Length: 136
Image (cartoon, rainbow, N blue to C red; front, side, top):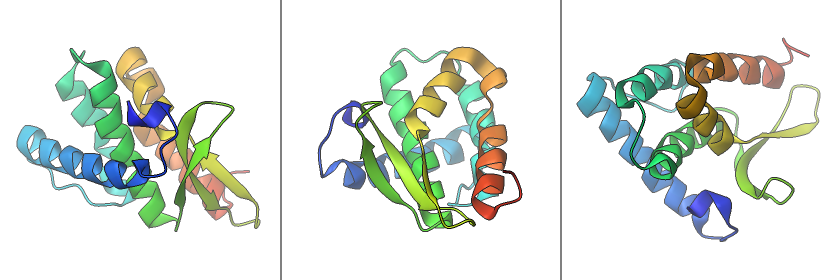
């Protein structure tokens, strides 16, 4: 999977996978996804509709890429390779001026494997609060 190895062109692929997620949500849920917090919150519903996928890696790629692209658009972030975790992350600047990053593919995988106890909507809410400085 493109998210588990370094390739400088991978972020271009993530944008394409995010578009696949948008198409799948429209087809499966009749939902229009945009790169905003409300759309991110719909990902839990999409993952529930998909259930246990035959190809977990592919579904993690699609959902994680959308999550990452949404964070990137919302918070002026950028894709960055995270060598310690051997995965791509989205890096952004928080309200306190420090930089942080989120491992969107790990979150997507946890949601598929663990169910709602690893809610993407809750993750997005906490991430949004941390970026805006309302959650320390």
